Image (cartoon, rainbow, N blue to C red; front, side, top):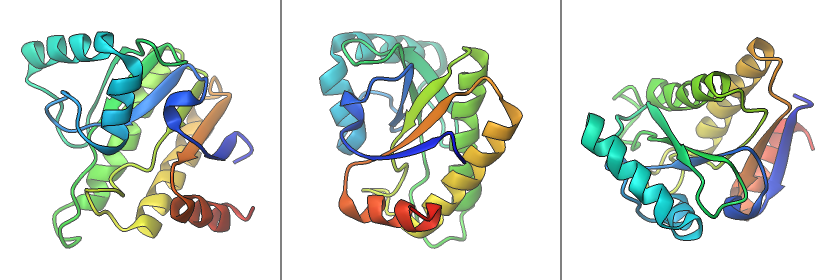
Length: 172
């Protein structure tokens, strides 16, 4: 866990090799983190997302794709689609876990050493924040043990509520 850094910040301003985007299945931008990343990164990100859409029809829930980071202080953006929370009876937990695992598969494939994650699915997708944080930390811990190449994983919280939640779980 000593490679995990908790930040209360704007993910589009934190210099890393890869920024994870909480995308939607269309990959064409949206609200929240997705919209902020597309706005700050500029048209290069959208252009690559459109190529991916043309090739494979978007990105499924639980999967991830990678593009340039455009004007962001990063080399890559990893776009992952987390699940909408319904009632906990539609594989939401497994789909969120798969979203994180899909990101780490690309981290390994591209030799990425530093990556920043937002709080996937906890905004307009309404995933319970405590459960989402527990899933995120479990997957991050597992992936750090499996990939010694990773130097740092940032958990970038835009709001105070998520920041306080992660602080308590991490014992900070």
